[in-house]
Every structure is written in structure tokens, then in C-alpha cells.
Length: 111
Image 1 (cartoon, one colour):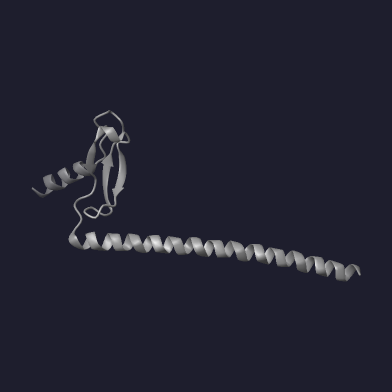
Image 2 (tube, helix red, strand yellow):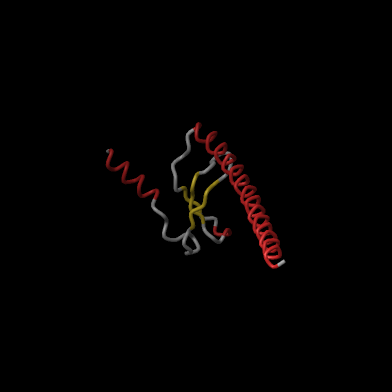
């Protein structure tokens, strides 16, 4: 019994070869409140309406935890972007100061 249930589970998770309109389905992540982070296969042609879950259902704790973690990731990515901009500014400012110092040093040596 156990072998057949794991075999059927692995068959269900295998990517479908074709959808109703004979296109290759793509793996997409759901970010709905009912299925946050749950993956499914869908047709690239939305009019086809092909749909098949890739993952099993998410437990209640996952329904709470996944959106919280996603929001945390979004905030951290925004913080990284802000720090990257600040770093670029500091690099440009440092390069400018080095050029000014070089010019001043050159003028002092020449004069």
C-alpha cells in the first residue's frame, strides 16, 4: 500500500508534457491567500485554462508563515537596493575626491 501511494504521489508531481492546446505547461508560484507559495503548472496561453498542482496542500502554519517570510524577503530586497545605491554614491564621491587630490598634488609639485 505504501509503495503505491508514494508512486501515485510522484506521478502527480511529475510535470505534464502537454496541456489542452498542446503547449508545454510552465511551473508558476501562487501567491493567493489560500495557496501562498504553492506551485502549479499552467498553460502559457491563458485562454487554454490548463491547471495542475505541483505541490501538496500547505498546512495552516505554512499559510501564515509563507506570506510573512515573503514580506520579509521583499523588505530585505528593498534594503539591499537602497544600500547598493548608497554604495555607488560613495564610490563616485571617493573617485571624485581622489581626482581632486591628484590635481592638487600635481599642482603643488609643478609649482
